[in-house]
Amino acid sequence: MAKRAKEQPTRTFLVMVDRTEELKVALRYACRRASHTGGRVSLLCVIEPPEGMGWMAVEQLAESEGRQEAEEKLQELSAKVVEWTGQMPAIHIREGRPLDELLKLVEEEPTISILVLAADAGPKGPGPLVTALSGKHVAKLRVPLTIVPGNLTDAQIDTLT
Image (cartoon, rainbow, N blue to C red; front, side, top):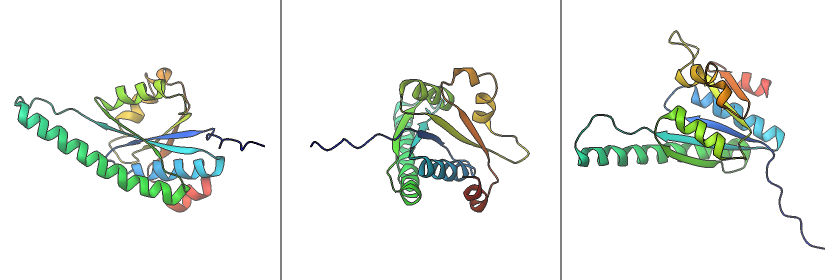
């Protein structure tokens, strides 16, 4: 009797990697949900192109530094995903505007089934991605959007998931 191929996870939880404090909340939530539903976590890091530098060598240096910073952040977050789920995440690195690249990835990658973002609980508001995707751009998503309050503690996340 032939061995059955290992089944692909039925749910992939996409988390947008950025420099916000609430990223940890979104990541932990996505990892807990993935663990409890037999799913997987996917990370997207978008490197924004340097604006208005003008000199090609300076632009290339900035792009190189941006990519190195992104790779280091993704290694750090991947270790957390493995710790919390037991699986390596799928990694996506793109260059461009974060909203545009996020929408393109969700459209292009059929395995992504849920987008998880955390909203900034501070006075500045929920953040540009949450604002855009919960407003006029929500119709551009083909997957559900989960918005997690960015001020949740680990214990609160664990209770919710």
